[in-house]
Each structure stands twice: as C-alpha cells, then as structure tokens.
Image 1 (cartoon, rainbow, N blue to C red):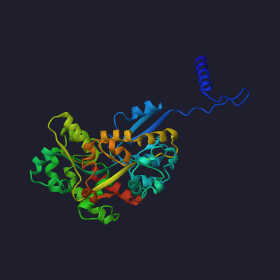
Image 2 (cartoon, rainbow, N blue to C red):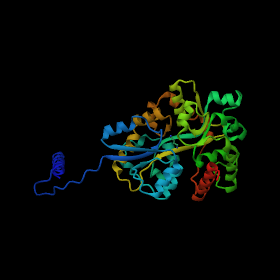
Image 3 (tube, protein in one colour):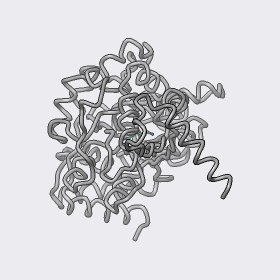
Length: 376
Ligand code: N2P
C-alpha cells in the first residue's frame, strides 16, 4: 500500500511539473488521466517489414501488440462477433465493404492525417466504389492472386514445352494430377478460388448464379484428389524449401518465397505468374473498428504507415504494391520492375476485382468449400 501511494504521489508530481499552465492555487487541479500508450493491431501474416513496428514504438512510445491472420473469413467472423479488442484491422476491400454495411467500423476523420496526400488519387477513386468517399478506410497494400511454382519440378513433371502462363497448370485435372507428387497448395478461401475457376471455364468470375457457381465447384471436386493442402500462409516456406511445387497464392507471398529460396541457395527457383486468362486483384484496407480503445494511437499508426519512407520500407520487405505515390521513389527498382508486383499494362487488362458477395452467396461459397475440404 505504502509503495502504491509513493508511486501515485510521484506520478502526480511528475504530471504537475510537466503541466505548463499549472492551475492557480485553489483552482481545479484534476488532470485528465493520460491515455495508455498502447495499440492493438491485427494484420495479415508476412505483411510488414521487420523493423516497422519497432521504429514506430521508438518514435512514439506507443507499445504495439501485433497479431496476425491469413484469412478474410476469420477476420470477418471476429469483427461480426464484436469486441475484437483490436484498434486496427486490415480486411480486403470487398470484405470491408460488407463489414461497413454491418456497421463494424468508425468513419475516419481525415483531418487527423498529415500524410493523406501521398495516396494515389486514381486508386482512391477506384476504392471509393466500395467505401464511399473513402470514409472508413485507408489502403495498405494491393496484389494479385496467381500461381507460384518451382520451375525445375514443374518442368520435370509437365515437360519443357508445357505453357506456364495459364491457369491450365492448376485447373486441368489431368495436369494437376501430374503435379500431385511434388505437392500442390491452394489458398484456403473460396472467395479467391471460385472466381478464377469460373473465369477459366469461360463464365463470369463474379457470378452469383447458383448453377454457374456449381460449375466451379464441380471442377474443384475433380482437382481435389491432387491438392495436398488448403492453407493461406504455409505455402511461402514450403515453396521456398521445395516441399511443394505449385501454389495458388498471393503475389508478394510467392515473391517472398522466391527471395527465401534464393537466400537459402539450395537450387530452388520459384516463379510467380499472373495467368494470361486474367486474375483477381485486391486491396487490403486499414480500418478502425467501432469500440476500439486506442483510437488516437490508431490514427498515429495509420498516418505513420502512409509516410513514404515507412511504406517504401514495407514494400521492399514484403514485395507488394501500394497506393502510396510518394513512396515510389524509395521503392527498390527490382520491386517496381517486377511484373508480378506491378503488372504490365497488358496483364492489368486481365485483372478483375472481386464482387462484394451478398450474404446468401457467401454462405453458399462457405458450404461448398467445407464440402470440398472435408469431403462431407
Ligand atoms: C500476406 C497476405 C496478402 C494479403 N501474407 C491477401 N489479401
């Protein structure tokens, strides 16, 4: 008790001394309790530079608790259940859009940002289609969903002449069966697998029609025996180590696998392609849930991430594109020149954004996905 009193007295004294305009004797001496210098962030795995958090903590004195996820569906379940305890979350735009409608996020007061002008206005206009006036979110990184593969193993299994620029590599059952032996990984999310299958089959990738969606499901059932696992982050190391030879995955993750393989120097070469038929492109968005306890620090962190040097540092580490125009001069030339990260104008033509799924289509996707994975 005595110790506590002493600590309290010292704290009060320190607070009084640091107060420039100390109240006059007899005035109101009550101090607003200082907000805790903490921040709880929930971001995708493998999605920030090694030193981003530490540098922010050093600069601001805010202690960050940083948790990771690898699935929009998992994040959404938490957000809809409420009280996540997080001050910042990073859903993909189409999921965010549905979550805004569910009233999950607080509108952002953009006047609190000093770095907002760094964002690319064309991209902001595109994003505003799913978040009107960009009212609830700030773009973090964007990328594509494509194919990562082990060059030597895939060539050995399919032959030197097999075209490696098409979804045929993974969406033709007989072809995938040839890759089964060296390991096949698929992202564990129906929302980014069903659309490219439909697109490959010549259907509208964002169809909400049950009969059309069934066509993708039937094709996936034929592919199922050749799929080693469904997972959305394990494939990075597995590709890098040569434990799998093909993955449907995210651009930057596969380019990280490529870098890890090169660093390990054990003769594994990983390549990423945006298939010629086209591919999903997506944007991951920073947003503050309603009920966040550390809103001031959340603004501070989002503003920090928009700083050109900070964003360039993130991009150089995780190999994703950003919407930060001012960061570009600090982004490594190898990243800017990599068509897997910044697609060529030709590849861009084939990219499509994903639809905001109505709840009944979302449920249908989930049902089909569970059946596919468990066979039930
Ligand atoms: C990073 C995952 C990329 C985000 N590991 C996919 N939207």
